[in-house]
Figure 1: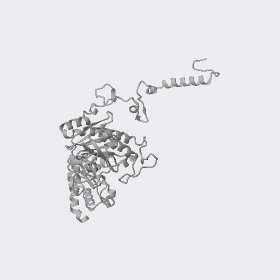
Figure 2: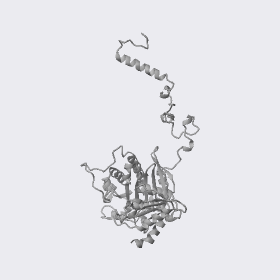
Figure 3: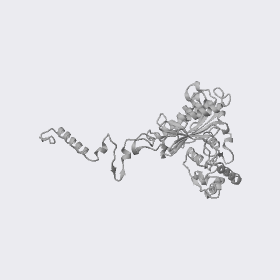
Figure 4: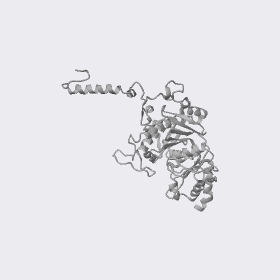
Length: 437
């Protein structure tokens, strides 16, 4: 019997094994068979498209241009930049400003929390973090103090921020979250009286724009830090709430983290604004935006124009003047064309205006005469960032940072952006305000 032929009486499993061996030999003898060899990269072209780049083993990231790896090397101009880490930035800044040295661990902890939230946002769909949050009984949680149904993501991110601010040392003694009805001491948050001490209080919105998650649109985290009133703390009834009801001018630090195409942490310590981008390879924030300065004026306006019929007359007239373009209306650069940009997340929209110039507005409406955004958790921290970057922040009647809060969930109209744009908006309120009222 030939080696390549089995007799009819051979067992069935032996025939199958022999046929499979023949098929493998025939396949390996084909001209393109070597393309599938584990010892050489594939190099075939199918349907007019070069597939070698998608199937070849990946070359080391950021190979220098003089590497001998053939055509797969990446030019040295694309190598990673030499940038300072966020921790190094804080170390130097707190050395320069000794009065804020105590909050260095707080800001480092906030950065770590932002990394956690970033991962959770990216995994929200695969980890079943969409939809309303449920209690131990399986029923949806009650609406929060804002009248909004709490989402799973809101609850998780709120817990992360609470523990980040309270569990980082003895600097922060109490916190206030947009998601909770009342302020809380860190002793209560951590379940340990050792965390009651602290010379600072912190306010935050753990996940701004959470409704955007379902559509894979940007969201963000906002925070602000104040000095605690002297004598505040356990045993002094009501004094902690007074520590939160301060003008925004008293904030010692504020910032936000944007979770988008890149994750960007923007921080002010009261002496300018700096931005840090999260490197997903190293898991570190790097100093990519030193000394951010907003242009004096810009052509972007970021309003929810679906509500324009509910806006006050000064705001409607301002938007109309802005959209004319080419006349400098609304504080626009002469000859520029107006550009509408609105994502629906405060952090995303304000960050766009901060980088490119223009104005963001969430004015009062007929259904929300006091405005919709919260003074403590959203307006004041973003106003501090904007002013420290050379911009302006107004309610239409004056500076946001001059407002004296009367309760922790107070709302207010807000306009943030380039100085020229916000100034013109205020002038429209002055000119048309009395007629409107």
